Image 1: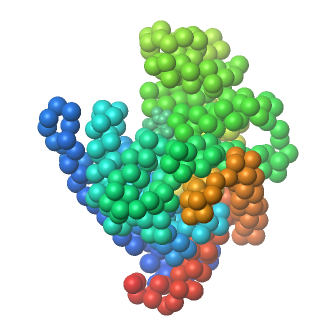
Image 2: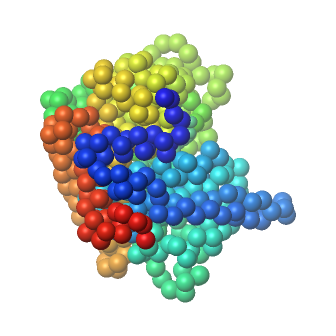
Image 3: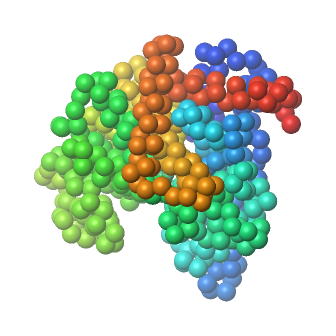
Length: 434
Ligand code: NAD
């Protein structure tokens, strides 16, 4: 059955791994429900003198391996179902790459592009006021996600420290460097994904040269991946954001595309090399505007979804031509699409492995905050690389051992580790709940 519920999709992925591990029903049931779902209505005084309420969530999924960890998303499409799925995937991701952390996630139903900086700050402080008793360096540690950034993390940290009356930089990650952020965090999600792709390319005995790449989503994950891959010699032929995208068979320089976007243009304006309107974008020749749907179906070697969930579904999976899909977004591929892609022999590098670089450097940020001693970029990068390379090798090994696809292999490893921690904590963790 086709499901667009991210949480239903997440549970379908869990069940595949549980079957391979012959997990007992009581433990499976425990893994199918979050520890805690917190909701709040946040009143925000607007600049025009009125007040508007925003619905907010914090889902604490599982903390058997360590404090809950996961970003906060600001998006009009946020739902409780989505935040539960994202919190579940965080639990699996931290375990898949071996971090001593659990999984959580937050979200606010808001279009941040409609708010002024002052309104955004009041909303972010309101989020912390609503949930601060459940947050903290040893309890639950948020981070950025879609449409949240280091500035929002800074406001949240400041509000938290006012409320608890002490410095606690480890309560949130993705902070500005001046407030205890980590070098390398801004590019960590993309960098981690690039390390994984390089490992996979080596297994396939392929080189970046003449390898074409299309990337959906041009934010923290997507734009940084485009720049890093471009530097390594991959040919980026398409990029997109929420407004649509651009395709150039001769290759795109992502730094130029980014400059045009930052100057207020659309990515499609890259074709003309200048900021322009939608009507002015050329539609013929080697360079043309493409929709997000078209981008997914381009004849490329590597497709990188780096935006939102449910982009590759049963409706378009058989038209996907890429042989490798690197999931920098969380949950971009539905289980039905997975089946179609697996049958076609497409290698899907799952989100819980491909985008784990972000939470890995968030973990480094917490470690540095706890020591109050900070690492250089030269210290951060090899530590990230080692974790990603080791995790890829473990997942690749599990793929061979169980004769399954990469997603199922990553879930098998992750579920095994979470369940081991639950069992070590005692019977109540797998049987009755606390
Ligand atoms: P971001 O806010 O920096 O960028 C999001 C990008 O997606 C923007 O370019 C936006 O225009 C684009 N977008 C939004 N709606 C779209 C649509 N309907 N179609 C195409 N593009 C659309 O967010 P981000 O941090 O880059 O997150 C992107 C994905 O990566 C999310 O799934 C997120 O959960 C995942 N992720 C992010 C991190 C991180 O550290 N930032 C870590 C792991 C996973």
